[in-house]
Image (tube, rainbow, N blue to C red; front, side):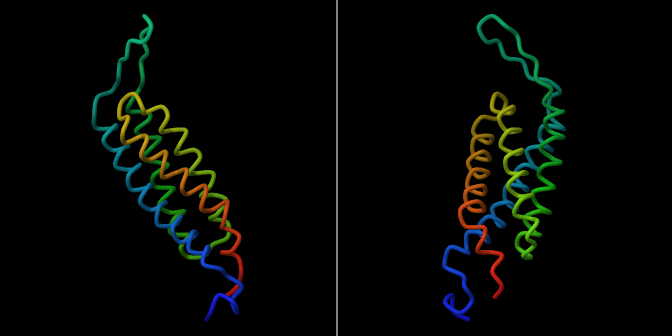
Length: 135
């Protein structure tokens, strides 16, 4: 069926892109969470004479849980569930916020996940409505 008869444009592929990226981001977040859980219990950084203590294991659990939820939401998004768009945007935002806390321990990994989360939010907010159109 062509896009003229279905009401969809080529931009509807962004929803599929977001679903795949959610799956990848979920796997990355889950792996990062597992590494933080089995790794050291704390990270110390001295900044301007102050000592900050980060519980890496706590943030590891956060990332593991968000990773699993991202994977499940990605699957639902690829299955065409309308509710998955809103949940995906919320989870991607929470994932990006959680990654901010891990920048001191894993800066490149955390920044990569934040960039992926921003791409997902863009894909679903800019072109997600086309996923609702019936084929």
